[in-house]
Length: 315
Length: 275
Image 1 (cartoon, rainbow over the protein chains, first blue to last red):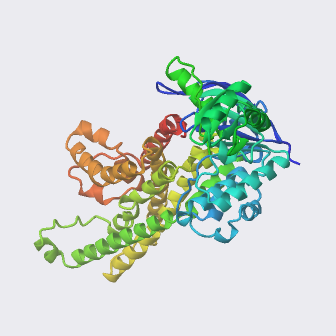
Image 2: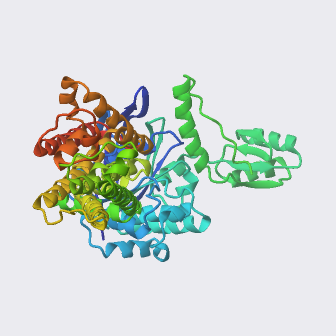
Image 3: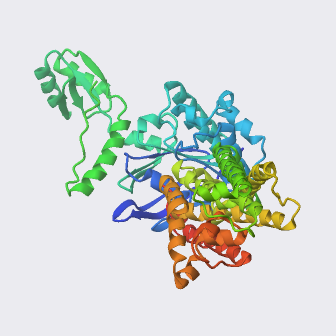
């Protein structure tokens, strides 16, 4: 078991000139769990991570690992592994790239072949990185994060550019790391991309915190609905009115504000209406995520705090 | 300890890419061509003074010693290569965006820049050794072919070689300073080439025309380098008796330029946000 330490972001702000990239952001990332750091492009995710890693200076606030800023960690690579972008000197081989930084951090040379093996690029280790595919670069940046066998991992969009096999691999990989007790923070602009891998979510929009907590809470939040359709929609509408159920009409039927399809079916039965479709609305997680993010955007853009009604769930 | 590790990492960075030996190869070719060629030309001119005079060249002063002049081509002409090596060690990190892994492995940026300064000082000395092996090898061969004194037995010759190696080492640190001031790789290369091949020679020539400017002109890096090494084609070719610093003063001027440029770069571009 690795002893992961928490990541603590407190009152963090960063301005680039007149642009506010991060605005009074506070959240905590717990060890032993995979935390998804989510938000649309330009929400301030990368800036937050770069401040956390001491690459960008904060305008205000703090970002620490168990209370210590990155530059004060006695053995940074053995405490935190970070993959921010897949940039390398194109003329260096993967093995040389890792050796350069293993040397700088005083890590044993045997770590280099070990991590190359771990991310599955050992057979390409002596090729120049200039010829690598995006997927291989992503794996090499992951290899870098593992060099010091750290208890904390910070990964910025690690799934970008991976093929389906690579995505499957990284999902298992993240879970495996968290099961070891490590702190894993992984950013993404798509909830669906990390939904299967994360335990907790931190959602930001326009540099501000929108929501943080377990993913399961977000799932409960997604208002559950039922889809019902009938060859005779007028009569179905009447039956739903009769039962006092609220609904909106969509392309593929009625979206009924009722989590239990059984109750909708009962209403139709009572009204003597033939049903052609009756099912629960598919996971509203992504919609819930989008409405959180967009709601925040709208609230900032103008003062109408209208919740965005998403009926993308019609399938 | 982290200083030693940073230093080892910087050496590894240089030797795991191809730039260092490409530059070393160019340095050897350039110095061999000029030292050998010029040695042969001077040898021929000494043997055939009349013919040489007929070509319009002024006759060489009889007291002039040819061997040190030819050997010093290694630094007086080859110094641009350690400057490029030093500059590329810094600008390459910006260009390939490798500052991120570098600063993650060693978050104390001044340690990284200090390691670049020291590693390039040593690599510049290595370039100096290579350059003087070349200039002494080809130059002495050319002189010997015309039966002229190679002066290889003179302690002065080897003292010149030693000072030349030191000059090459200091030039590499000037490259580090320049790279940290001008992180854009293309801009840095253009500045190195334009300044060393064009601007400074003109400035030195212009400065030598007047006593006051001549005093200032001796602090130009190329002039300081020639003062340090002690013999150079430029200092002989330039019109008028341009004043020259003592060899150790020349060395201190080069060192000061490298240190000051690196300190300013370290306090400005090197401290910027890495995005």
